[in-house]
Length: 266
Image (cartoon, rainbow, N blue to C red; front, side, top):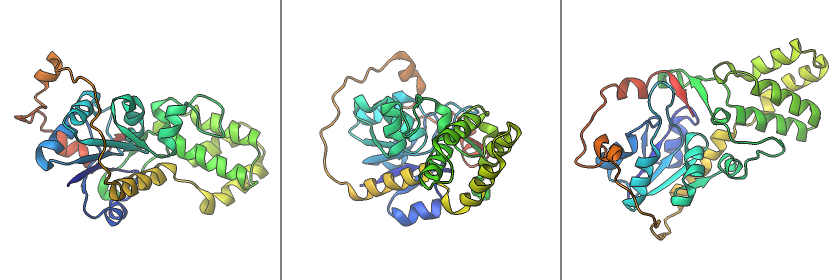
């Protein structure tokens, strides 16, 4: 019973291995990687946390459907995994965590606006060798601002105003420090912003990591057999020409460079 987990900047690899030592951990997924993992590791379950996008094709919905059609359980959480789990939950992909649930409900409480954008979980990051040093995900900023309000550091109006400031930034430039700098330039109360800066070292929330940890706990502890999802997997012309269904034929030689190098993931 092998479990493959696609993981990148959301959680340190050594911590993930400590939580689930028997799992096969793979770099952030891109198109074709689930099919490759099935061909190479024959897993009974797959956990999708991080996935590349922008510079390479993102993990394909069709190959997740194919995995489900093969009787392999596919779970998602935290980042790209939460997005795909929300999009494919009606076909049997399972989601874990608050971010997945927020996409399902179209709301990340206590914020009232719609929660539907890919950029909520997107970051740009350095290579694995540099611990995936990255920008801050919008959803982590939201969770941190909500915690600051709960601790009485800021009120709901400041929480929402700061979230709007961060949301207006391009995800590749979005960090907590950049948000606070922009808020200062906008004329927000300097004393309140200073109090928030002082609170951050002990109060910051890493929601993506928390959801990744929840997924690993679920995968490690959940061995209950489930009915196979019932749907018709259509072998379309694009699917049959993709070369992803065995006999597998590798088609992209750039994978290793991309998977372990700099990039954008969600």
